Amino acid sequence: MQSATWVSAAFVLCIAPASAQVAPAHDPTKPYPAYTAPRLAIGQPDLQGFWSNATLTNTSRPSELGERLAYTEEEVARIETARIAAVTASTKRVDVSVVEQALGPGEAYNDYWKDPGYTVMRVNGQPRTSLLTTPTGRAPTAKPGAVAAQTASQPEFFKLLGESPIPRGAAYDNPESSGLGERCIIGFGRNGGPPMFANGFSNNTYQIVQSPGAIVIETEMIHDARIVRLNSRHRSDDIRPYFGDSIGWWEGDTLVVETANIPQVQAYLGAWKTLKVTERFKRVAEGRLHYAFQIEDKSIWDAAWGGEYEFNLLKGGQRVHEYACHEGNYALPGILAGARVQEAKTAQAAALGQATGAARSGH
Image (cartoon, rainbow, N blue to C red; front, side):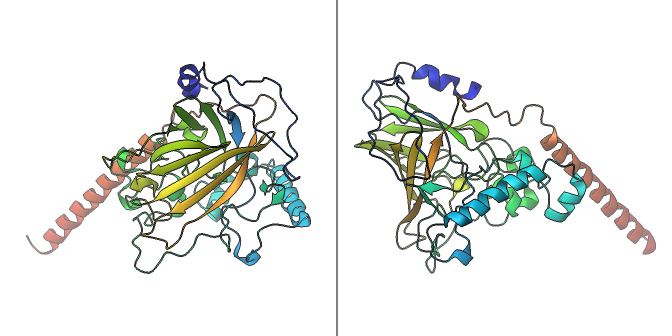
């Protein structure tokens, strides 16, 4: 994986575990056993490795489930069996044009090509109905008078491709007007975070690399890398890098990451300028990494809220692969060239209309 080579090389002296013994992975359907996270040679709890958060559980709870935190095991069996059936059925040949006409652009990908996982998300063995842990399993309503970031003018499909604040009608003017994901600058959805969510589509894997002074969380989707500076302070110059300004510290075996200075193009549910996201990472069992996050922005919500889920360690030597997003991609130049042709035809038609009108009026 080319995008992570520099990370591995930079911290090669810091990543060796204190013990190389590998224990069997914990059964995620069972509660956590007594567990102590292994330590790296540098003394930190070992969070390193290749992880996945792919899941069939939605970020927000389906409204018909009300305040139910967990599914029954019978419901889990139906959901997971339906996923397998959908993948099996999707191996049949389909007419792409018919699918896109019915479902919209970009939906010609069938289940065979998607990777939302095959299992419902479990936390301490409990099958969850949502990743959010509010009473309703949904984000709270913004308080009266709250002013959200202006990202809602785009169609939902292009929100997925980067949430650019530029209205979609202007997106064909030049490459910089297109969404960040569409230009392969940062990933689709909120894979890279914060908070980090599976995108429901594919490439939901991560690599964590540790060193004494910083921790890197690399996301497979467009090889985004978040650098968490340990025992540091937030920058005070109001420069807002992609994924915000992340600092971290250890509380026992838990890595706490606090992110502020999030840019508007990565607004979360309309919050960005005073948004603070606090994430907690902890190894809770062999092959399981608990992840919890808290959202705070008093300009949007009166109280903090959040959610939790678990990453699972990739099995059998699997790792994050290079995400070659734009290599050989001719779509964006084609789109822009098509827009210029359409503009020329529109201008030609307008000129012809003016000439026709002038001739009819005798001028």
